[in-house]
Length: 543
Image (cartoon, rainbow, N blue to C red; front, side, top):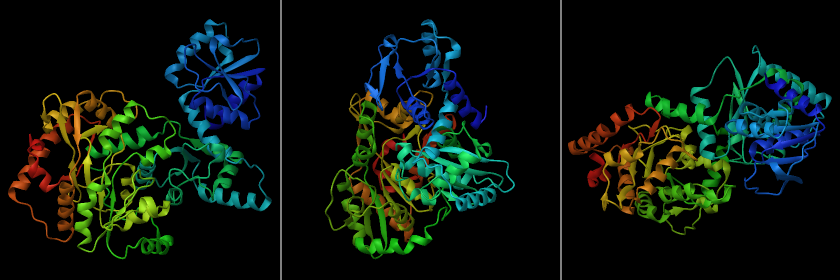
């Protein structure tokens, strides 16, 4: 059943019944309700299983009830709007209550993607009137895009986090630029699709998400794509099997193991038309020469943008990933003495910073465009691993990663590091039980979880295991951060040299890690050279 037929089947089911119920009160139910609302179909009620917690007594004025509280009658139809893993159990419960199978319609995972795609375009500030001139213009544009192709492939893009969105764009630019097809991305975000003004996760992101063979729906082309969805739906092929987890995240890890996941190109996206405003913004910030981008992860951005409550896995994640911007001060002062400014990137930081050595762009000057501009023009990046680092992915800029919270992980977004270019230093891992630092082999043994299910990501699952095992993360000291910063600057200035001992220590680290990786194809790692001084001072990393 193709895209158009799937939607027609929903309408046909509604026409065959007097009352429509939705079994479910979560994401699947919400998107279905939005679609039904736009089609002027009323909903008699939402149903949840007996014993399930009802978070809200109603959704958009329609009551949410337990199954035992609902009195069904002939002519009732029920959409089972739940993930496929729950549908069999729910359908059995409904059949046991005397509901006929022909009165049940399961909204499976593929149809959910279709609903999301349709609502994100057609239901967004719905407007179906098109002037004669618009119609003529849109028809010409549509046929120019289509060219000799039979259809336009539509993919639901990932916009729930900035890191994931940027990684998806990078993969499209670098790996999926097919000459024979045109791809339209419909970016799914946390915004209400009926009132989406394309501000999340980053407004400027939509400006650069395009090329000759793909684009995304955004503010300036929304009405055009509405026209196509409404008047040429037969030419749209919704790729219901496409997903961020399988097609971006897991494929990136697969490419890592093949040695093909590296960002060695410059200019995967262009900022030419906005370069002047970027230079003006730098001047306003007081940055007149070379600068680096620095980033200390905290919970400020997360609290501002995350719509769900903080649960235990996320609390544990913060414990292992957050750091203190003040630990960067020594490195920033070192750079300032050499005429290099340090610009704190990110947005909504939890802490303020008033020191001469660091420009607090994240707190005082943030703009969605400058996130990209700073990534393009910085001398190198220095900071924690988080979504903000993926602004760097489009330019081959050196990366200095600090406070890396794990050695390996799985099922998470991966940055395409280049070992010959990038540097990294890690947390130290203190065992309460052993009353000492764990060595590399012991840490890898704890991290060996890539076949296990996870709540948010495989990396979060690894950190949950750390917590369970009583592993205390010891963040990098100001001295360690300064040392690896100096190492990178020496490299860029052509003054870096490594001793035979340095190379031996580096080889010992990789001699332990690489055999581990070869037998675990789902595992990700940070493919950057370990900082020279850090490796000298931490023998646990080589045994």
